[in-house]
Image (cartoon, rainbow over all chains, first blue to last red; front, side, top):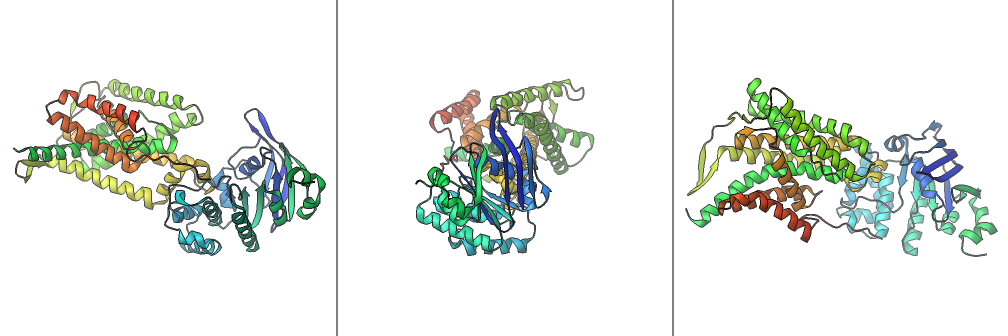
Amino acid sequence: MLKIDNLHVYYGAIHAIKGVTLEVQEGSIVTLIGANGAGKTTILRTVSGLERSKMGKIEFMGKDISNLPAPDIVKLGISHVPEGRRVFLGMSVLENLELGAFLSRDKKSIKESLENVFSHFPRLYERRQQIAGTLSGGEQQMLAMGRALMSKPKLMILDEPSMGLAPILVRQIFAIIEEIHKQGTTILLIEQNANMALSLADYGYVLETGKIVMHGRASELLQSEDVKRAYLGGA
Amino acid sequence: MTLGQQILQQLINGISLGSVYALIALGYTMVYGIIRLINFAHGEVFMIGAFVGYFIITLFKLPFILALIFAMIFCALLGIFMERLAYKPLRDAPRIAALMTAVGLSIFFQNLMVYLKWIGASPKAFPRVIEITRFEVIENVYLTSDKILTLGVALVLMLALQYVVHKTKMGKAMRAVSQDKDAAQLMGINVDSTISFTFALGSALAAAGGILYAVSYGKIIYNMGTMPGLKAFVSAVLGGIGSIPGAVAGGMLLGITENAVSAAGMSMLRDAVAFAILILILLIKPTGIFGKNTREKV
């Protein structure tokens, strides 16, 4: 579904992504793990059109989407839950969700999406009139995910959904990711919490300073001594 | 005339002047909100709006309302043009570059007007578009027809703006872009066209302000935008730059203050007071009345 081939991205003179190749099969959950600063976020931002690539190709459902403007990529069915949630803090929960369906003109379909989001996140329904800035961190993460679901994406990419959340909330968020996946959305997930990510995913890639150093079935990566030593906090 | 009547009269005058400041301040604040730029050429859009209105009324003999609408459309296009040509190429440049460009544009527009043969450097009498009649609201307190016109038009436009910003798709896109450009793009919002739209909206309001100002003062001149432009800037800062209700409140407050200073017999000091307010607000509460400190939540 998503194919990244030999991707190179620069930040000014810094060569941040040095020839990354990866693939996300339709219907799967793929995770990209790696230390802070390895370039995980940069890859996602390039996929969704927020950064330009210098070289390489990004293909989505057979279409070359390299360096397309971000709104066009949303239109094709990729929805990005950005790092740090980035909800619109000054707007209500409902307004945030409505913005998630910005490109849709079909009122009925927007209403359906809204109901779907509320079924995953009953909490958001309770808080729908509240200003997003007054939500807790966990609720803001739910809102960011709900907002991304509003466009009925084929592929949802999530950047560190567990960041800064209490363990119980992290488990809740991961359970919801699984629910969303079961409804037929393909998932590409970035995480520092490698253990949780690999337990959930089908396939995993390990990124180190802008390069993929290892990839394989998530269950195999979980058992790999190298991965354990570097990312799972144990030998 | 009692003191109470005098205060009420000055309040009416102040609100009328303040509503013009508010119309201009809205453009400052919206543009600042979306690209963090103080568009110092905004006062010139106000001036050009007044001139467009003047020509439509005198040359084409069209009624006031059509002149108003046409001037607003003209300036909206001018705003878009200005942004595309002058500011867009500088979007990733240091902020001071865009600010200098704004000051440059302001000087350019003023001199362009002087250079144009049918405009020139001398003032022109703005045609009387409304019969000036006085209504006695209560004993010794008067409302004149031009003030009613100013207040009425300003009020309608502010309500229309409120509707656009809160109820329409473009308005929602505007607010989203002003809060978080990247996140807005991830929603499918086209940032460039949203910025253009903001310039168009702000410039149209400035044009309306220019015409209303010309109606009250009876004459127009190439540098008429400088002072009201700066005053509107003070209003926007006073209310909290980036805040739409703040711009309206700031404009009203400044208009009332200025009139109070004049009424107290110190009309020579009215400009000084306006800028003293700017200095004070920057020293005491730089975020202004409605400005808020948004903190990130972890």
